[in-house]
Amino acid sequence: MEDMQLRKQRCEDMVDVRRLKMLQMVQLFKCEEDAAQAVEWLSELLDALLKTHIRLGDDAQETKVLLEKHRKFVDVAQSTYDYGRQLLQATVVLCQSLRCTSRSSGDTLPRLNRVWKQFTIASEERVHRLEMAIAFHSNAEKILQDCPEEPEAINDEEQFDEIEAVGKSLLDRLTVPVVYPDGTEQYFGSPSDMASTAEHIRDRMKLVSLKRQQLRHPEMMTTES
Image 1 (cartoon, helix red, strand yellow):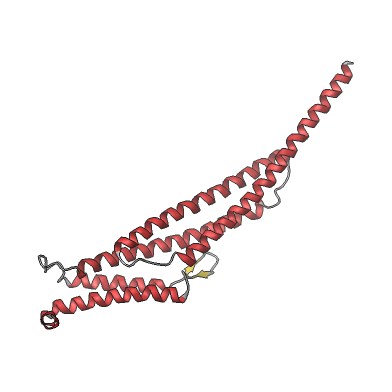
Image 2 (cartoon, one colour):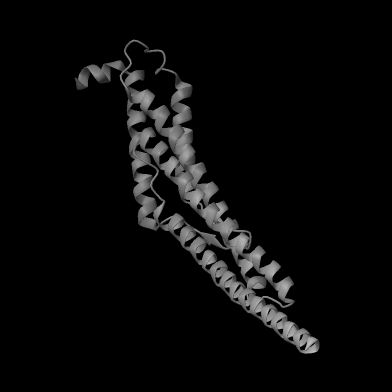
């Protein structure tokens, strides 16, 4: 009786071990699938960044709002990347427990890291363009606003030169693609999107240039009025 009891206990223990392994296998497959899904989500965020996050704003205030929205967008991408990393770390632990190799984590981790690197490069370029646009719009708005009580403030040639330089740099920046570590390139938006953004910057630069001419030749303002 005692021997039978021991054998029964061993069988129950084996059943418990197998049940635990089956649960771990199911959990492993689920982690692998979810990690692959995280890579897809991150890829979609990168695609959205490059195709839809294009506008630089019509003025300084709008551009600041766009920059804040972009930072929140980056937070979503960061959470997605962290989620994928956690899932892949879980697959490693499960594989060690099961003494098996993962079906996909060996491929998923490099893909996750590659897409995240591409996203961060594109995101940094987006931030740089928005910050340049804020500087351009802010300085242009100061010049274009009527400030009769501070005529010297808007008669500074260096201010006009700075606005022109930032505007030209921003226009040049729009034509530069995002270059990834593997040498591949991506542009923000379509050529028509780029042309529309550049046209608005040129229009603002023309207004600043006109203001400069009016300050150099006050008689132009008298004639026009």
